[in-house]
Image (cartoon, rainbow, N blue to C red; front, top):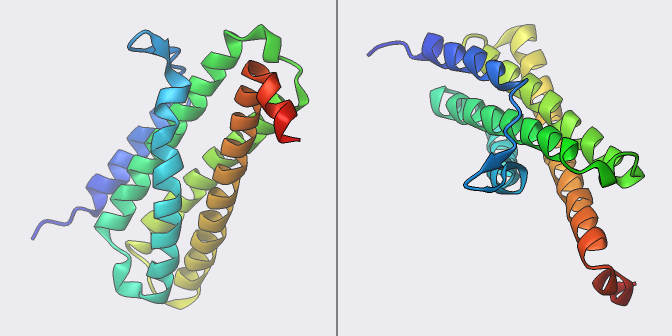
Length: 173
């Protein structure tokens, strides 16, 4: 059977090309609210799968790492679409909640890069000090990515609901 590890590494490196991409619209709608649903679903699944993989080392492999690469690509596109969306919404510039949302999204992107790198490393190194270090990084980044995905989504939802429907947010207080 062919060794697919180099192919997954190549896909991971290629996905980093998406870092500066800023998609402003898709199907005539702002791209950010459409694309963000992919990492909102995939990051928690990847985080939980990574935690299981640490407990069951035979879970480390091509499928988990390939899923991490897809999740990384979706995260990079979502952050870029968010940056493009912010540029089209000058009323949000300077909003402290927007700054928090943006910072949390940047943190998710950073965590996903490190998580994917750790999982890629675990394709080759599973034992010894290096394997343990990679597992620790993978767990820390999986938990961090999961937590910051929740925070980013919560802040984004608050921004939308407080901006678009102040009467609803007032009645919820």
